[in-house]
Every structure is written in C-alpha cells, then in structure tokens.
Image (cartoon, rainbow, N blue to C red; front, top):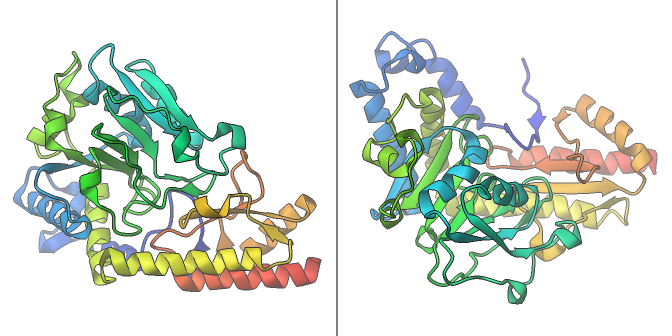
Length: 361
C-alpha cells in the first residue's frame, strides 16, 4: 500500500513515523501483551504514559508550573460553551475577536453563558483580513478576551499575540498549535482540538493558568469544571486513551525534529513555496487572503476560471494529492500543510499546479 500526500484540513495527516510506531505497538504495548487501548487508564503503565506526554508538551512549549495541562474530550466546539461556564460568573461579559467561521461559532456557543461583546470583527471583509488593532473595542472589565489564532476555513492567522492588557487572553489554537514557538505566559488559557497538529480527533489539549481555575464557579456538573479535571490529572472520567497515546508519540516526534523552532522554520518554508507558486502564476492561481494575514497552515486559493475546479480536483487526486477541495464558504481549493505534511508534499503540489496551468492554460 502506498500513502498519498494528504492536505486535509482535519482530521489531518499524522506523522508517518508516529503511525508506524503505533502500528508496531498496536497488539502488544510495552511488552504487556495487550494494546494501549485495552489497558486501564489508572494502571501504572498508562499513568506513566500520561505523565510523559505532559512532560514532553511542557518542554516543547516551555509551559511554566503555574499552568495546568489538561487532556480533555469533546472537541474544541464543546469548549466554546465550557470556557465561559468556567471563566465567567453569571452576568459577566467577555470580549470576542471574530476573524472567521470558528470565531463566529465560539461567540455564538458562548452566548447562553456570558454576555458576548464582539470587540472586533472582519466579517464585513468576508474574513479575508484581520481587523486593525486600533478598531478593537476591548472592555477592561471583561472576564476574558477570546480569539482564534488561525482560522482553518478562511486561511487567516495571527502572526503575533494580541496585547489585551490585564484581561486573560483565551486562544483557540486548534489549527496552529505546535507549529512554531509561542510565549505561553501571554495567555490565560489555550485550547486545541487534536486532529490537526497533535493527533486523532476526540482529544482536546488545554493549557490554563492555575489562578483562573480558582475563579468563583457557577453551578454546574463536575464533569464540566476544569478545576476538577485538573485536580484529577485529567482522569475525572475515562479519558481518550488512544488519542492521549498518539498525542504523546507526536510530542516525541516533534522533539526529534528539533523542537518548535526547527518545525516553525520548515512550516514557513513550506508555506512560502506554495504562496510563491500562487503569486507567481500570472493570475492563473489567486490567494484571496490579505498577505499580512495569510496562514502558514491552511492556504486557500482559486483558479482564474472556476469552471476548471472539477478538473483540478479530479486530476490532483489522480496525481496522489488528497483533500484539496476548498470549504464551501470560499470555494476553490485549500491546502492544509500542518506539521506532518512534509516539504516533498508541497513540492509535489506546486509541480502539479504548474503542469495543470500549462495543460489547461
């Protein structure tokens, strides 16, 4: 069986070395005679795995001890609602910076639990740019400021950390976490669905400042309370053990790649190669996103004639390039080039794009 180049936005490509190791260990993990999926999450073997995964993640991101690391479930969408439940008292407000579909959805799902103030939005520009900082209407009394660091659908990304003063900054980093170094101390809470740069779907990794866990809590079931998950080492209920295991393997793989500085440099090179091909095509291909806001992870692009879209998708798949169809909100194409997508995959895509343009020009 031959693996193809996978440009899926999520669930997305996993490192081949991680998949091969999981394959080798599937039936007999650590010589225990059973799969990691068959073992108790409270047994010594799995507890050791869980601790190592947290240690490796802390090393990769230089996470200080005054931050808890949680391995949760529900997908990022569940936490759109769960975050205001935990960080905002009843009647409080929170600021939302809306730069795409996921920021919009986060604000909508939060609305039953907090007064949502859309402090800035680029909806009027069809989410193809970031709202200028001097237009943000932040409330210094807000419970927190929420933003999505990288919008998977629209292909816009913050290339720095917004300064929001003393109000805790909350970031959905589902599609660009671990793609480059970040300063965790700039944030109150970071959360990410695993299915893009961490592992399989069904796992959420959260990094939360411990003082925020001590905020007065509204009435809710313990299963929704982050403080209870932190107090129980993310094992308040049975966790996603398979997802946790694969996340741990991915963290080890990232360390073997040279850490996030080296990974970030490779990601910048991959994105630069693809954007250069788009911009240098003489208008045959176009990027709809303002250059200063272009994502390094998700790159939407269109053909000069949309009538060619079906041919492009059919021929690209035949050439071994998977999942290039753009989201219906934008149409066209989208290449998601997360950590596990190697430079060779982007080179193959760029080569195909040039050949396609010659044949269909």
